[in-house]
Length: 448
Image 1 (cartoon, helix red, strand yellow):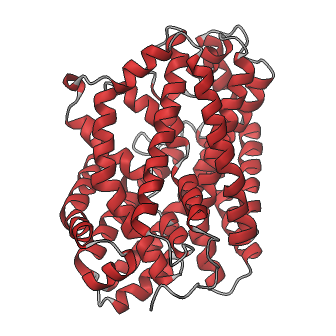
Image 2 (image 1 turned 30 degrees about the vertical axis):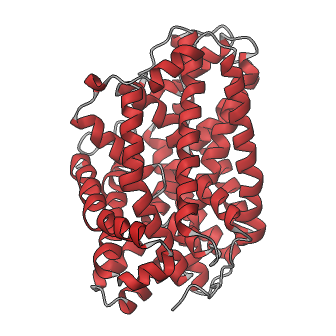
């Protein structure tokens, strides 16, 4: 087994296509929605510094390991781990990494598609001036009305899933590659334009101060766990996406510098999105630690109160749609790739995965309305899906990947595939053997 083979799925045209694809996978709702509000809740700049250290200590090593496993085998995560456990003489239960990744991606896609559908609705709402002159009560009522309409949520869920399936069905080159070459430059351009717009707002200076001033008194053990968790989840680790995209990575591409580039771009998007969001929030005298409602309740009112706010707000939600779309594509790809390896045509594999995930997503749609009173242990259907994937399957997958590469994979095999210098190879071994597993374990235990 070696990295010279191309596999049955094909290979990205060049290193930068992989960078765009992997960045598209990493940049999602977590960057634009979750990162700003958890930063607000944990004291701003000091939390950002802690988060960056966690990216270096946990995110990059595990991502490097996952990409390496994919490129070495040129297979879907399920078949990659099946082959690697044999070649590396590792215990058979490590095969579960591939299955857990594909299944968690399948489950996540089912509810991610529903939530991403909300962003489609908000593009239209902002562009048509729904929030013009609105206050926070109106915005809350508008959001509540959307969640309470199962027919509309089902339509948006169906539309977003169809958008995702359309790209995947066209294959690595015509579908995934062409999509990321169009979507990611568009995302970066829109982010730059929105950053330029935020420069004109009265809250820009306060936004920079909030994100980059260091008040360590606001940090605690909870902040560290939150930073660790987000540094892991923001890079799409543990769900097989990076292993799958790694399987399409050109053999001549430098793995270390490529993975580092993806991590840097992902972090920059989160920081710039934070600057844009907090500039708008502070310009309206609103609270930065507004929690999950920041994206769908606070920001629409804040944008609408600014000059050309409806247009700028619509552009912002287009940005969120692109980020969500590029992530959804990568989430679905591991299961589709496995089905193709089983002998199914890609279009049939895509239809099956997306249709089944869509069907499961109906449970999430109803969790916000018709089934909202049906709860188990205080959690709705959506809450349980989110909990099991985010708090159990992804961290467990991350721990197993780190342990497999750090403890069971031959050092010479890691060196041959990663092509890291001896110093960086030694550092990677230490991170994967000790630091990353313990850090992700802390997130895992805290989540439970």
